[in-house]
Image (tube, rainbow, N blue to C red; front, side, top):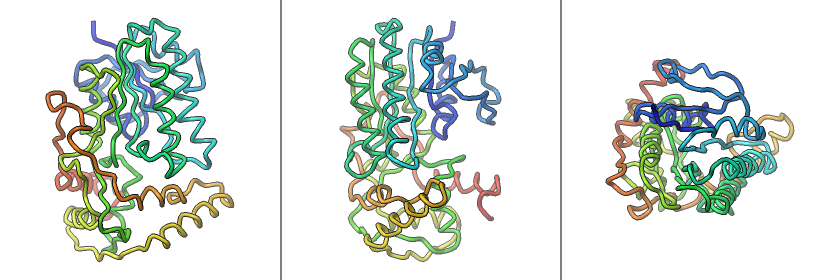
Amino acid sequence: MARLAAVTGATGFLGRYIVTALARRGWQVRILARQYPVYPQFADLNLEVVPGDLSDKGALRELVRGAGTVVHAAGLIKAPNTAAFRVANVDGTANLMNVLNECEPEARKLLLVSSMAAREPGLSAYAATKREAEEVAARAAGSLRDWGIVRPCAIYGPWDRETLAIFQAASRRIFPVPRAPDARVALIHAADAAAAIASLCDHDCSGGTFELTDERAGGYSWDEIAVAAGEALGVEPLRVPVPGLALRMAGVAGAAAARITGRIPMLTPGKAREILHSDWGSHAGRQPPQNIWRPEIGVARGFKETVAWYRGQQWLAS
């Protein structure tokens, strides 16, 4: 009988990669979803689907029933306000942990998918609620058989609409670069991040926190990211330095516009502070052990494959 993994956030960008990676490693996968998911990535998978969300205790009980491993990947990366971030990222995690502790906790393993942003909770509501979700999970995880936390860095790859804007800017031969020459930004392809998570499901985590990056754990400068995007597109974009003050003002303007339009902005004051933070790099001591997982996709290959996919889907002009 196949091992059963229960996954929250399975219909999100990274979540779909996680589900696929688990299935490839021989797991039977059960997911929580508001409606039956129809995605090309799931076309050949035999998924169990539990209707519901993180506020539905009955659905959560059904989700974890008989599952030896639970991957909690649900959460918001954009929200209209702090309260909305808290409901999804903190309250949702608390609800899941309560259910796990009700249902034979000693037989279960939990892997919480957090974010490297949780290292700096003072930067934004997103970072603060991801950190608080980690703390909620850690406090409640003592009765579980095993548990761990993963903190992916900036994730990109096919199907991602968040980093599409980077390639769209580079394709117009203009690439805004934050004026932070010493800043380092770690990157990881979604397939690599999902492979790490699936591999950790097969190994003891012992309450550890693991950061996930590509082979350049120390990260890239903004100039290097601009050059790599241009090479993937076959263009040489003009790198336009953006002063920190200008980026912060754009974040304030984005938040103000959101209050008027009701739309969730791409750039907020918190997001501007995240972008301007100087150290989003990692190092070997924070990564999963190499006998468990190693990244396979560097930025040159990853950007090239992502651009090809965007163009194939007509998300990006040829």
